[in-house]
Image (tube, rainbow, N blue to C red; front, side, top):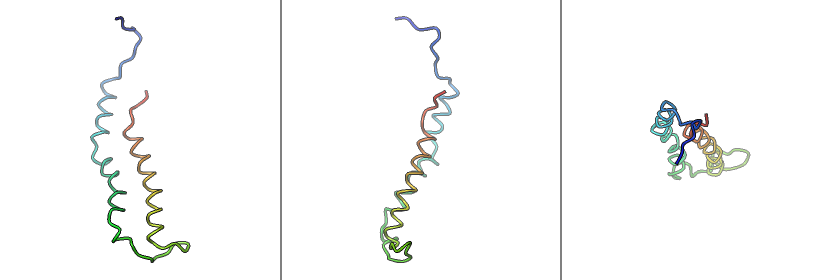
Length: 84
């Protein structure tokens, strides 16, 4: 087995930063927000206020579809490995 002299190993500093991102409770808390917002339908199971004729029950859930996509995108960017 031979090793290539020009092969690059990930730096210790980049690895440490990556580990810090994965352990960050803020990211995991952010991912829990959509779950908690939709977990209790008793809170949002009502007809008013309406938005463009849609009852609150429907547009609230649809709003969370969009917000969850944004939250997952932010979490992905924070957790993905650096490609330097």
